[in-house]
Length: 175
Image 1 (cartoon, rainbow, N blue to C red):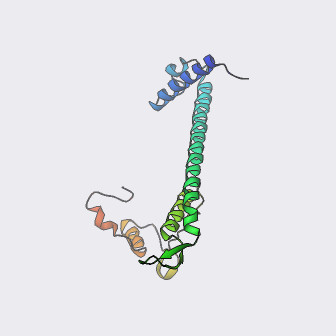
Image 2: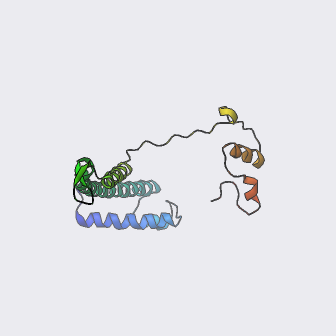
Image 3: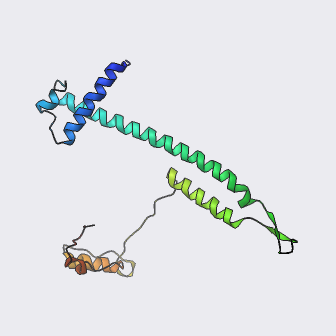
């Protein structure tokens, strides 16, 4: 059943107020939330999650439109650079004599950068898999130790010693 514009505006206004109250930490059964027109805590909760999902869908649609526009721009740039990167062209010496043929290596670099950008934009590159191994490629020895043992493990991986950082107020997991 389609909702008319006035009803849609009322729903959007109510949901905006609901989200604002929730961001302030107001519980769903608070009288301020129920005063927005919700009959129960459950109704407010359900509408809140509908609002969040609706917003997520809107953001996904915007991101998709942006991605499409960027792909079209990349298509145009790639179409312009591709011939220079793939077609042999004459090479001349200082006297103006043709001495051979070559592709434009700068254009090749440009094409590769455009392709890399497209892969990143569309998530085409596979994630890099990393693995931590212990001494001589074996299992990582780890027990219930503290900072010293963690520091030793990180030392196996070629990282800095955590004990050096414990004196400057930066702890494990701090940025």
